[in-house]
Image (tube, rainbow, N blue to C red; front, side, top):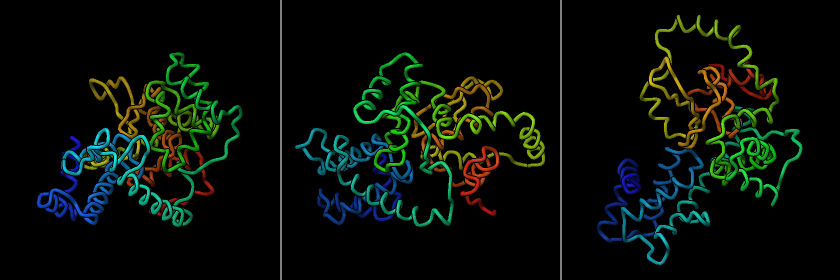
Length: 323
């Protein structure tokens, strides 16, 4: 699989064929061509998995390189691909290029954020949270959570490590590892709601669900009846499955009998507490803030409306589109 990912990327991106031709001719790559290879694969990685790809994705691309081009393997290292990406140290050609791209895009974001879009899920917020753990105490709590079968203990330790988690989410090198460091999101429903309440309080958290039956549902129903087409195309959906933005996965034998809802983030399923589609959407919206993930570009206006008009978050600082 890793080999195929690299092979397809090189055949689809400009300059990829030149890399393959040089290797077939010389059984090696010159420094300029190696840089071209790395640049192409990092661009493909970011396109499919976001600006901060998970560690397993970086490993897959590194493995794919030495599998497709065996002569590039380093026989003196444990796996042979560490010089492209070493998961233990976080170093290697792919890692260096990723950091360069991240620095550049971060600078672009800082320059444009004030004029383009202020407020939203990626805003670093000051919260009045007491009893927080840092340093060795935080590490001990994180270790305890991973092995505890008591959900109350897990929730308590998650509260105590909230600020550490927020700091991680706003660190370019750490944000993609959040589900690796806090895997209980994947098996303990309710943790998204808990973090969201710690960010904004219970009043804001409950706004959408409280007003849906009497205020929003009748209006949405009326508008939907006048539309010829509702939703997005299958092509658009499939193109976004590999992206960094979270989305809902509904599991059931029939659409009218959904049994379980999951939020998919970094290709990992986070179980929802929700038993209805409305409550599941409420959790999905909150997940953007809990994990500091930007809205999908195609849904930016929609989510911004929900953020400011429904939840009343960052109303004064968020610039909404006039479209």
